[in-house]
Image 1 (cartoon, rainbow, N blue to C red):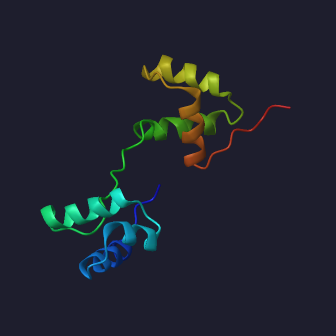
Image 2 (cartoon, rainbow, N blue to C red):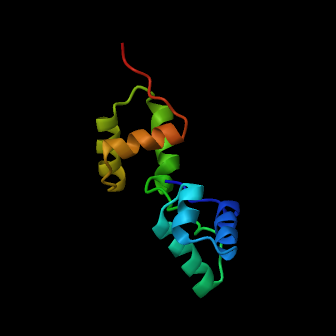
Image 3 (spheres, rainbow, N blue to C red):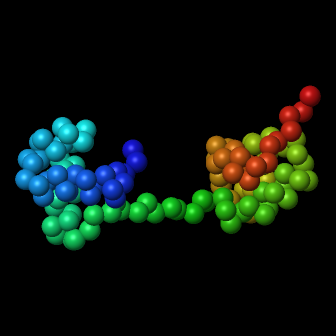
Length: 115
């Protein structure tokens, strides 16, 4: 679920500052009472209104992207299980076929199917 925007939090806090109760504010804005309490507590204790930023982890396949692109250029019709075996044999990289599929999609490389 996405975090509520800074503006939305400001509106909720403004309503609370105007003397409206927590339950009424929650009903008015369509949020939970516990969320209203948590936003009020964050402002009171930490002085912040904006939502926490999300931390983006680097993908586990990114260090191997060049190798992966080279393998796909060398053999465009390679199966994922063959690519997986090559990664383990050549690099010692144990990776799932799902991760390889996601990496190929992120690198905008499709594998040609044999016919």
